[in-house]
Image 1 (cartoon, rainbow, N blue to C red):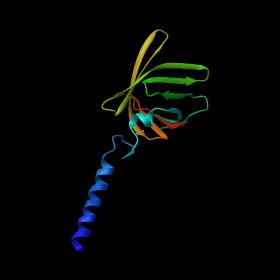
Image 2: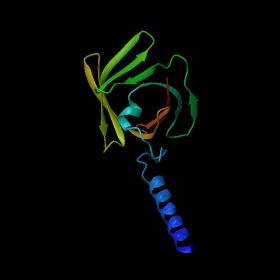
Image 3: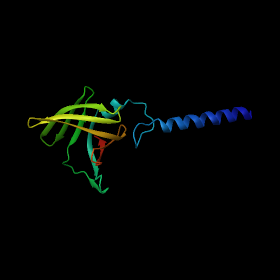
Image 4: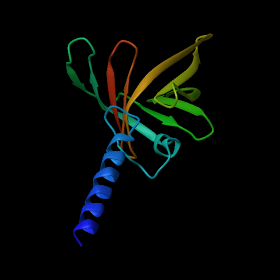
Length: 137
């Protein structure tokens, strides 16, 4: 009986270590049954911004718009009556996201590191270290 208990505890310890270490993103989740695409592809509204230099947090305002990711790779930035459309793609082995859009005749691609991606939260960090926390709409 003692061997079975020891074996069971060892297996439980190994499984818990595996589940906590398999997360790809800095702030989680450690494990999800939904695919990354399923979690990302929805409409997000900004909750707060964090300055990468000072750590200062700024709450998002009601007029800060929202972003929408679609499963076919399309991206929309909606701010009031203005909508900017583009495309999105995974970057850095799905640890980041690259967004490409055109405005005023110029095309631009920005790549951000994903810090957290759940069904309700999406946190990213840009190349300057500035962070944006989004919540699902």
